[in-house]
Length: 199
Image (cartoon, rainbow, N blue to C red; front, side, top):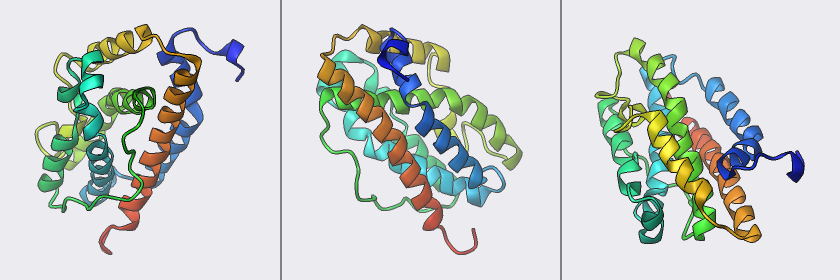
């Protein structure tokens, strides 16, 4: 895809540029069959917890908080931790390679991916009902954010799209978004590889 073919809005450009890694991640998730049993879903939650806990520093960042005032409330690390307890699964140790003190523009790309995943969670939470899980038990991190998924995403992207970034910063944001998909893919594989033998 050439620059001329990319959409005008930054959020739409990031969406277009991350289409391939997003699709690869979707295939990887399906291959691990997280909705086939509670045990396999628990490994998916391990990956979610690892990813969200790595991003906690970004959600608490003062500079990013000036841009997105509700950013601290958007983090789902605590919900994922509680889900692990519901699923009788230990909180995993950190995995080497977490994003560390990224530039503001690079961080925007990571947050774009993290926040965008809440839209997909609307479909995932329907899949866990058959296992007796919901937004109060075992699948809190997939629950509806306060104010609604669509409205929360619109608020986030409106702010993201209105930011003035240099060409170099645009590239950093793009790199951050791609890195976020690659990181979650890595954490997903790690979560299933490190599962107890019975899974």
